[in-house]
Image 1: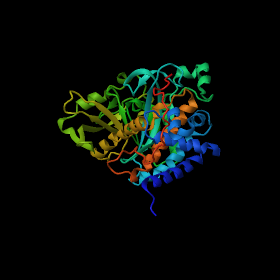
Image 2 (image 1 turned 90 degrees about the vertical axis):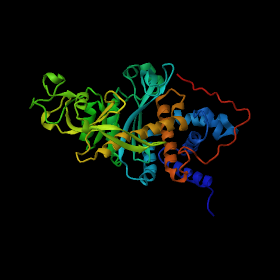
Image 3 (image 1 turned 60 degrees about the horizontal axis):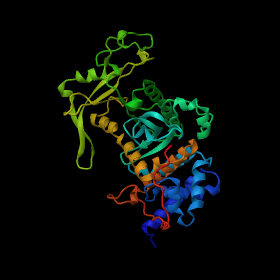
Image 4 (image 1 turned 180 degrees about the vertical axis):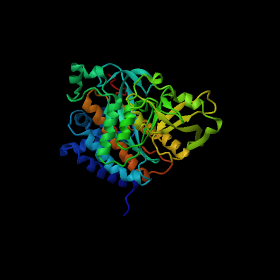
Length: 427
C-alpha cells in the first residue's frame, strides 16, 4: 500500500536524521537532533529552544527544554562534519536539476543589543543596511539554477573580541581561534571545499569580498574562476595598454608609476554606445529581469602584482537606462569565449544566496538563537542548515505552487496553558 504524503515525508526525514546522527557521536543525541530539526521546520514565530520544546514535546516541555538546550549549547559534536554530511545527502537531489555551477561567498548578519553575545560588535549589518551592533557569519554555498545550500558557516570574531580574555572565556571561544579577516575566513572555506572534493563552480562574490585583490589571486591559484563585484575606483589597464614598469612587483603608488592605469568607472564611461546591450537573465515573479550591460577585456592593477604574470579578464558593467551613471561593476576570470548572456547569468546567480538567507531567517529561525556562546551559535546554524537541506531534498514532493519550506508533518497540540515568551533575549 502506498504511504500517505505525510507518512512518506516522515519516513524520509527519519532516514535523513539517521544519516546526520552518524556524525554526532553518542546515541543519546539522536532524539534531540531529530526534535531540534523538527522544531525548526514546524510552524511558529520563534525557533528558539523554549518554544520548540513546547511544540515538539507538549506533555513534557520542561524536560524537553533542558534536553534541547544541552544539545545545542554544550554537546561537543562537530559542525564541520555535520555540514559535510548534509552536503553529501542533499547534493544528489540538487544535481537532479543540473550540475553545481557556482560557489557563492557571502556573509549574513544578526542585529543584537548588549555586548555579551559572542562576536557582537558595532559593524556593518547587512540585515539593517547600516552600521549597528550585530554578529556576522561568513558563509560559502554551492548552487545551481534550481537550488543552493550553505556548506561552510563561521562567525567573524572582531579583533576587539580576540583580545578580550574575559569575554572570550564567558562565550566559550576556543583558544585556537585568532583574529581573521572575513576574506581570510572565506579563502579557508574555499580551500577546505576544494580539499573535500565538492563539485567545483564559479566563485561568486559581492564587492565586499571582490575588491580584495589578494582573495581574487588566491582563488585563481586554486584553479577556480570567479565573478567578483568591485568598486568603481578599481584601477586597470584598458584594451590596448598595459604595465610599463617591468621586472618589479606593482606597488600601491598607483598612477605615479603606471600612468595608463584608469578606474573602472572611467573605462565604463569611455565605452562607445554600441558596447551597451540590454540582457535578460531570469524570469521574475511577473516578467523577465533585464538591464543594460557592457563588457570589455582589461588587465587589473593591484599591490604586489608581477607585470609579467598579468592576464586579461572581463570587466562587466551594469548601467540601467534610467540611471545617470553605471551602478555596478564586476571582474571575471571566465574564459574569453564566454558569451555575454552567460557572463551576466553567472553574475546574477548570486540571488540564490539571498533567497537562502531570507528563508533560513524567516522560515527556519536562523536568527532566533538566544544563547551567547560560540558553540551554541554554530550548532544552531548547523542545525538550521540541516533542516533547510532536508527541505531542498523534498522539493520534488512539493507542488510547484507550494512553498519550499512547507513541511507535511503536523506539530503536536500545545498545552492550553502554554504562553511563549515571544521576544528573544537579545544580549
